[in-house]
Length: 620
Image (cartoon, rainbow, N blue to C red; front, top):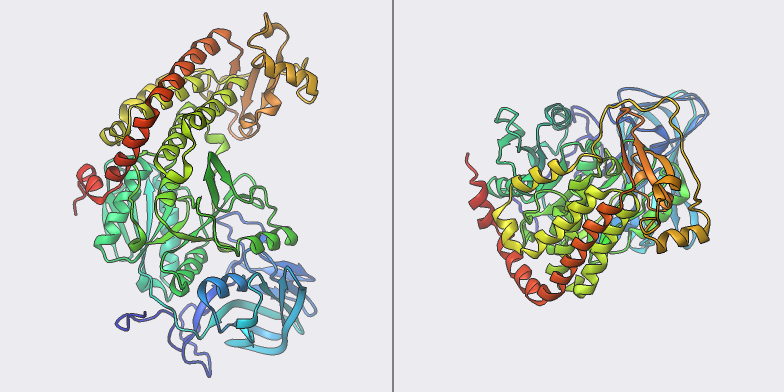
């Protein structure tokens, strides 16, 4: 039910497309913006094909306007600007919708619907004379009969020289709630990156009608930013317990300040601020109070392609829609159709952008330090996750971050989740399969230091949850893992000018590949260093197993920085770490029943507010 004591943003007769919101929309008494037009942002390095499809003479301006010559058209059937009506009808019971535009010129505006059963159809068309005022252009009729998998988009054609200053999908329907949303960024000594995010937020709330309902809290784990509270931004110095501790502190702060919803964001995550507005609107209208919004991710190295749009955890992390080309209409429409369905139970949202209701939190983050805390949080709390088009973070991908430490953290959380959650239980043999998958992947790619780290991960899980509860800062293990990294450490050493590959063994040949599998990638063959392949890989390709079959030496080069490292075939490392892993698997088999009991009991104790307050000791 609505709380009448709280004012609704966008609930008065104002123009939500205007920077000063001083121009009224005639004949409308209560307008709520659900989604606004988004254009490329130079600060994000975004590609225009992800936002608009121009036809004719069109120019984009720095003030988020589009200039069209007579006869030019611009189509908004893009991932950032289509409107998923099926999602809004299904999850928000939307009954009223119209499109409003603002600009100057004489235009023809047409709205189309695409659904999986009937293809594309025209919903309505209207000729408008725009004079700078916000104008309600076209009402969408009979939403109750709308296909629950359909998407809408509009096309604007200039009948004379035209400027389009903004467009938004709006409703007269009353929201169910007014989210008081706290954005939480956890950071560790990344002052410049966080400063950019804070500036983007400040610019947004300076003109947004959502400003009274938004606040940004930066949890500074590195204690390198001056603690402060200035209007809409608070900086909190925090003990360094990683992302888990930082976001736990942010959640505590949000509860103490009376927030109803939280939005977790990485310190290197860059988002269009309209993504925050879209998430806020969806949370306001959603009929299920447990609704959460999970943002997608785009890697900075390939800004037209999705890295992930939600992920499912079962045995391994399975990112959804990886590789989707956001320039291709068929691919984005197909993805939107599929995400109209309720999310699977085992889906979670990455903490680069995850907005959720605080009242639905039953478990605080588990003290993983980093890596796996977002998976754990998503699985432990029964959120109803929704993914919205255009709600995405631009940030560095994960491939370049792989290291013994990262792989230790990954295996550790994979094992813990299968011990803690009954729906993920796979028995000791299932845990063994997961551990061996990580181990063999590293063996094939000659990453022996990572193999050592993976053994340490299994041994730490065998110690039970108390080990994690007593070491939330992870200090000693971090030192040990850092000292471990020698051959797999990036360096600036110069490589031979004539550095070249040697490929005596073809991984494409099924016979030779089979031989490599039978001999543990040559580790059971004598003198393999003398005739095995010498490969050169990028940070991205080094994560793939298939090209590494037959490798006796791998040099990884980062083309952006010039940094590199080389790993070389070593039988002694494989036998040493292999026997250690076999011993750990035997221990896992013997301890499994007690381990399950201990982990399920201990997990509950370590995901309470009391636990986090005891270790964080938050102070004002």
